[in-house]
Amino acid sequence: MHVLVLGAGQLARMMSLAGAPLNIRISAFDVVSEKIVHPLTQEILGSGLDTAIEQADVITAEFEHIPHDILHHCEKSGKLLPGAQAIKTGGDRRLEKNILDKSGVKSAKYYVIKTRDDFDHAIRHVGIPMVLKTALGGYDGKGQWRLQTSSDADEIWPEIQNSIDSTENQAVVAEEFVPFDREVSLVGVRDKTGKIVIYSLSENIHTKGVLSLSTSIDDPELQKQAHSMFSAVANTLNYTGVLALEFFDVGGKLLVNEIAPRVHNSGHWTQQGAETCQFENHLRAVCGLPLGSTKLIRPTSMINILGEDTLPEAILETDGCHIHWYGKEKRPGRKMGHINVCAEDYTGLQQTLASLAKVLDEESFPAVHQFTEV
Ligand code: AMP
Image (cartoon, rainbow, N blue to C red):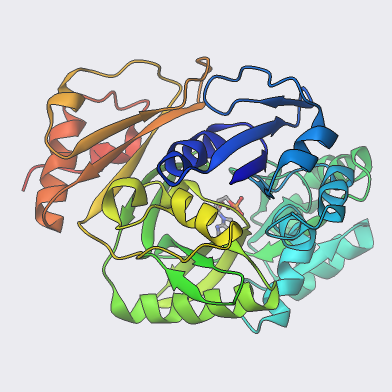
């Protein structure tokens, strides 16, 4: 099988690593250079997009911000999974909210803003405090504002208006501020026949809007809620492949924050913590193969490596630690790789994370520093 991935970053790279044992070969379309590249070496593979589409058995995507003309071009071949509509939904907060409403799944109260009148209406309808997010192009907390009091509305409006005016078809989604206890996410997979399997929920800690730490959690009640919300969304989208839902946990009740129509950073722990990792299961789903077990084999955390290209050797010396570099050039705050940390039980996991806190820099690995030895 030959799979063409739209996007040539770390997710395509990890799909390639997971696909190799199944003889699934990956080539990647770099949307910036518009070249077909090898997902591990970034070597240019000669053929252009049209030839790559022709040569591929299946086409999939590693991120949702793919230019729409390319998505539609790929969809015409009949090989694109998940479909263009599902991928576009992840890249436009208006479509995302529509799908959530259509699926009967709860999310924060919202109002779509294009004009100052809309903004005033949103203040009355959604209430304050309020979170404002660009409909297109926002991720990792970028393109967001907070409105704490109505007297600040005049001050932030010019910036919001500028953002709406500077991109075609842009709008801002105003959302009620959710006083959540924690953020969790569910990664699952739906195959071509509609069969759904899900992984254990992850608890996610973000620092400055970027995911820092994800840990598998064992919470049957929450898992049940997340499962039914996941099934509703995946079925509404008639989805094939791995899909992630990000939630706010408010007193044990889940609200969906975001839909990611792809393998997800909060599912990287499945490489060591689950029977079949998310990358392999995504490939199995889009290639029409039977799905693998998503069973949690041991409690696992994933620590993102942000803006660092070396790690203390102590990480490799620590039992249960696995490093995954992405082979990228170092830039401040850039996702350079991750460390998966496994243990026999949650106490052991906490102990290992506490021991890592002693050797990892607090600035680059803030979330790990909340763990102290028990
Ligand atoms: P997002 O890009 O939507 O994932 O937002 C980035 C981060 O902002 C989230 O991980 C939350 O920590 C926070 N956030 C987003 N929306 C809300 C909301 N409606 N209420 C409170 N916090 C939010």
